[in-house]
Length: 185
View 1: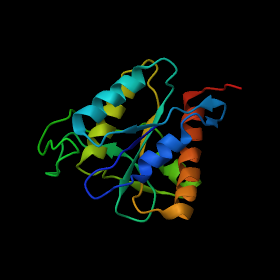
View 2: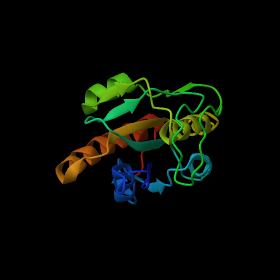
View 3: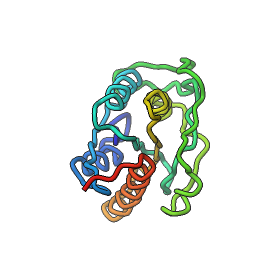
View 4: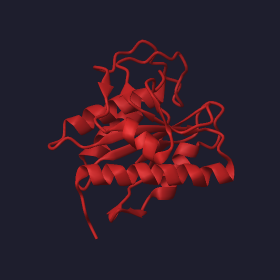
């Protein structure tokens, strides 16, 4: 699973805290690898592709932050960057083509209902979307295709909200493990 590090006016990125906080956790008998990616278009996409290709990767949950107050599962990633905001390296990818628009193959509607989160059709136009598009492409290219989903969590969750957010992320990770058909004791 991945989250992101600081960027712009987000000094502490809740998504990175969730990912690194779950690093090494056992969920449904599978050890989670949690990594905080830099909020950088090219570096995040390259790291995602590398992580998916590593031995032992059975699926992926990527997490990012947004300004809203709810947790969302993202159904699709757009095929182009639409934000003119620079990443942490100062790169602007506005208008850059990423590849085709892709949709997750996980049953987001059922998972959202079970975990009490929302489904979103728009992953945004910034690094989250660019990373999700790379994640879906990399997981689709594996044999068999690996389940992958992106979650947006509130950027200002607070301590209590962080615990609730981690519980929801854990529940989604458990569903990815189940969908991958992996059972390890």
